Image (cartoon, rainbow, N blue to C red):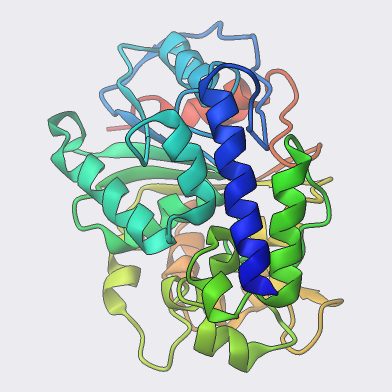
Length: 323
């Protein structure tokens, strides 16, 4: 059953991407409103790398293309790279559903490691699942010299639920069915990106055994990867944006490294209450105690920033660092 549905989802998404490439429709699931107030241009020597979310791509003019343009308008002489993981934007959208996360990270690592303009460091901004992936990039990619790491609605502790779909409903609904049928079924787990950060608090053993991405990148194994902690604590600032009315990332506190307490899906624990933090598996405690984690809240649905929010709250982290 899972195999049949997975094939159905892939076929539907391929058709939608073909229609999108032909200009007949858009498959973006999570469009970003663009604030209009870019009234304080600043200079910075630090480039910016963007990583989009599920169903989006590098270059759509009303999402990542608009964000890129906004940064370029607000930050004088900014060099902004919007990651395209594929040979074209349609491939990029498709891969946000079906290219395994580790493969996406390998491609992104190659991009940031071989671009000479990024060799001295860059700010990284990830939107939705891209917020989780830029953090993974900081940990896994030796060539990723990230200065400020900004996660806008990123599910840092994964998701356990996808109750609301924005944008193209058909694909999202099919993805939801697959996750409900069995996110840890190998066929689904190894092929569907969203299954790779599916975190079932009621099935800790299955999550730890079968999830191929999230337990590892969160250093949850008995043997810790000290390189992850070493690299993450080299960043200057980690900025975590949580959407207060979010019904896409469930629980929404995952955007601040919170999650459900193990064994149930009702009671949540904050980042500071988790073993991840208390035992400093990733260096979050170190960063927080040094004042290098910034928690921002945004009143609205997932990625739906009100006018002015991005300019007021995010652009300042792209300005020159103090001496």
